[in-house]
Image (cartoon, rainbow, N blue to C red; front, side):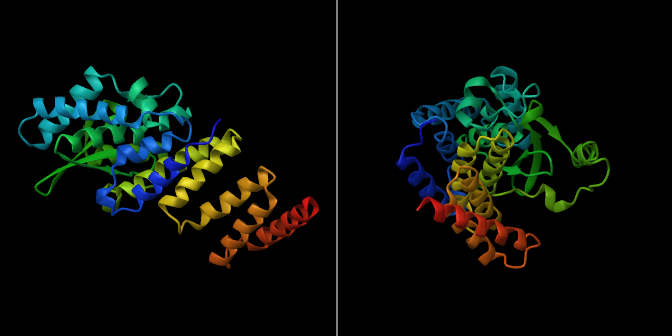
Length: 279
């Protein structure tokens, strides 16, 4: 795996530093994909989204949430074939926007990104909704909102449908609250995408890849203390003892009272001993 061009990280950092509403979600998602595909032609994929948006705008000339939802479902799910990857849900490719556009399959948040960006480029208001255990798209118009589920063909879903899904996932232990259906920002979506990808890499023990993703999470949210801790642990797994100790010390400076503080201090001492033996 070749590292992404340095300019890609710089572009990502500059992009996520903008006010939330000015972040181009598709461009940021494609810059994430550059971690795995250093030669990725971002402009070409943005052009494909623009083309889909032009087609949607041609078909849905008037606003109206039901028309927009139906137009998105017909264009993206029925005709283009975008669908949820139920056969290999944890394939990392499901999290890379270029692969989602090429293969027409993904997980809820990556398919929602396609829906949001096609709708937005066509002039309609769309945002993500981070329901626990799932991800939806909220279309909005004149104060009204409509939820659609890109993972399931762009179907319109009700609050009762959302509660039913929560019941299936959490066996009745989680009740739907109004805040769960509030739109989330683009920066929050990027953080969720990245953390999904990090979890897959950590589970597969692909620590170098996971490290690259944690670096991006910290660009999106520099205050994410847990990511600083996780970066330290990933450095340790890669035998980068000094870097690991540095990050774990930084984590304890931010969170001195965490329950794992004693364990982390012991880890730092061990890492510092190992680093000293290398010098």
